[in-house]
Length: 80
Image (cartoon, rainbow, N blue to C red; front, side, top):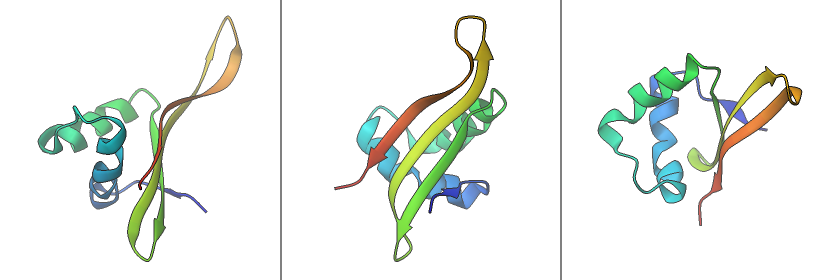
């Protein structure tokens, strides 16, 4: 079952897996970037195996005139 990354530690623990998908990410501003994105509705969830993050998804639920209310997946990655 996915866990919502709410605490700073949970968000920071997702960095390694997300960096596999987005290698341009920098650890030093990762937390601030995610927190800023959360203000726009971004949510980060992860799955862990024996305490190690192995999958991460970033998504937002929003509405627009074209599609109405929908889910948009920004990031979806599993580690090797």
